[in-house]
Length: 461
Image 1 (cartoon, rainbow, N blue to C red):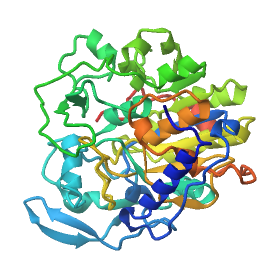
Image 2 (tube, rainbow, N blue to C red):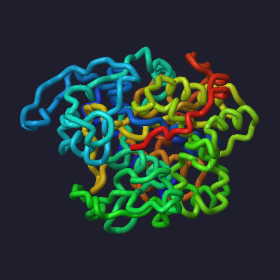
Image 3 (tube, rainbow, N blue to C red):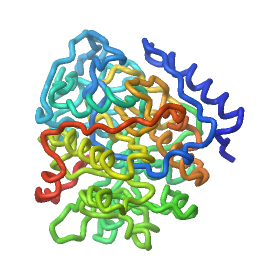
C-alpha cells in the first residue's frame, strides 16, 4: 500500500530522494522538495498535463539560470567511436530539420552513459542517410522559446526529469497514461508501431506486426538485450491497467484532448486509442477532438478534474512540424487557465515526451532493463508552484502519475508510478498562492481557435 503523505516514512523518502538527487550530474544549486503536512488534494482539484514533442533539456533550456551549463560536449566519431572530440553547442531555429530518434538511436546516443553518441543519428527517419555529425549538438535560439523561458522563470523548472524508458513518442505517451510498456514478464514494447494510427484502429484495419519488442530481464536489474524485430504485438493493449482505471474507480472525471488526424473524423491521435477497454468502451467519450476544446472547456467552466493535452502537428515542437508555434500553444493553454476560475486550484505540468535525438549532457540513472531514458524538460505552473525555482530532484514520468494519484487519492497502478518520487514535493503548499500574470505570446486564444487543423499526427516516430 502506497505510503501516505502524513507518514514519517514518506517524509524520510523525500529527504532521501533530495539527498540522492543533488549528486546527479553535479547540480550546482541543491534544492530540497517541500513535504506538505497534508495531501496535495487539499489544495489541488484539477491537474492538466500538457505534452509536447521531441526536445531534450539542453535543446530548449541550455544555460537557463540555475541549471547546468557545460561549455562543451563530447562527440564520438560515428566511424571510430573511440575518437571523441569536444564541440560547442550552437544556436538554431525550431524549423531546422528532423533527425531520427528510435529506441536503437536512444541507446546509441546514451552509449553506456558516456552521452557522446549523438553524431550517429541521421536526418529524417531511421536510416535516412549518413550520420549527421554535430547537427544534434544544438539548442533552440532563446528568443524562439521565450514563452517557455518566461514560464520557467516565473514558476518551477525541473532539470532532472527523465522518461521512464529509452525510446520514441509511442512508448513515452504510453508511459504517461499507464506507467509501463511491459506486456508480460518477458516482453516490453520499446518502439513505434509500423502502422498508423497508433491504436486498435490499425488492428481493425488489418495491420500486423506493428510494434517492436525487447526481451525483458529481471525487474530492477540493468541490462540491454538485442531487440527482437521479428516479434510483434498489436497496439491494442489488454496486458496492463491505465490511469483511466484508477480515475474511474475513484469517480474522478477526466478528458484526453487530442488532434484529429484525418478530415473524415475517424482518426484521433491519442494513446488511449491503443488501450482496448478504452477504445471500445464508454471511456472513449473522454477522448476529445479537436484539442482546442480544452480552451473552450476552461472558458465555459466545464474542465474535468484530470486532463491530458496533446498538440496539433502545427503546434508540435517536433522538428518535422517545421513550426515555431509550440511555445505559443502551451502558453495559451496556461493563460486560459490562469485567467479562469480554475487557476486557484490547478496544477499544470508541461513535459516533452522524448529527447528527439538532440544532445543532452546528463547521464540518465539506470533503474532496470528499460531506462531511465534521456532527459527532457518539465515545467510546473500553479498557484502552489515554487517561485523562480530550478529543482534538481530526480523525477521521471512515473512521478507525474504518482502526483495525480496523490491529488485524487486513487491508489497506485503499481508500475513506474509506485517506484518513482511523486511530484508532490515540487510544490510548496505553505506559500501564499501565486497571482497569475498572463504570458505574452505571438499567437493567442483567437489564433488557435480559428486556425484550421492540419489533420496530421504531431509525431510519427
